[in-house]
Image 1 (tube, rainbow, N blue to C red):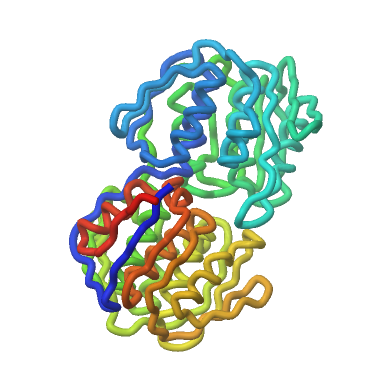
Image 2 (cartoon, one colour; image 1 turned 45 degrees about the horizontal axis):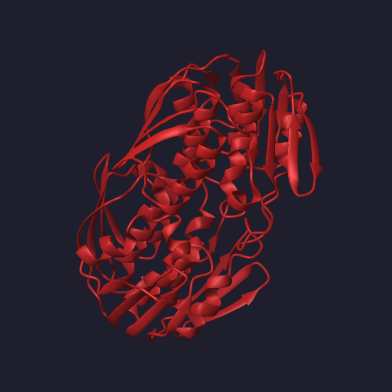
Length: 420
């Protein structure tokens, strides 16, 4: 399983250039979209993270053949060999639910395990199910599985009651093979959804309103093969921006899309961090001698991302004054705070708010990662803590960060992975 050990002197200085990997949250729906055609798909800029291997294992069970060469993936589903996604794989990664829409659309039947609980809070899939029913699917929930059937999905109008990234993606893919036009309203606006839409268009889908809250899809059965590049991971980029800010570093981030980071950049600049856009694919971040405290509230894109909340919590422990961080997306996303308290942070939790008092000196300790972004926050805290920090259960980190410790090591961090 492994651990990460960080040795800090309390005043590290990260310096250098780091290349950001492809977006985990963009590649997973793109891989499941290969179910919509019998032809070969090629995806570039694949992040080599645990979640990618998990979804590929699931896809292989459904009939996919694939070759992963460095950061390029060729995948083809000539025939659907199984319509079932087992609980063993779905509970390992909730994004596995994204096979539901395309599998049902192409094969007319899908049996997908209910994802179950989640470490960061309630993540219901009711909107996925309601949307597919409006498209004409017959759905039953029994014995922990979603059983969906439809001889042919029929285009219709669907308005989501609330923002749902996975629901938007699932319904988008299903609509591509539905008969007639589907109008999706109140869609999520995340760049990963736009990236999926652009990929589906390359496959032959007719989609209007990409990047907007209302998306129109005209069914285009069958779709065909295509080549597509996955966008850079804005959360990994944000994590490195915070790392530069925390360590008073001088980092250059390459292979990014700065327009996807506007809210994160705005918050960092407010705290005194210097960020310079070098070109359309790179940024430079320089830490400030003093970090200014501020209040932060998570919200759907283009608001402040919930996936950056834990990292900014660490940043605010080094700010002068008190900050209030409000989490509006997930109801159990403060698990990292107990671990930060072990390092000496001064944080109180009250309902959906974390009250962070700074500036506090952090000292190394043994910690445990509880989820993906919590693990990243512990790495950031370990960088600035005095002494040795051990992070256990780093399989959470591996789900979404490609060789994070190796990248930090090239920037000057004293960090290594040790076996257990």
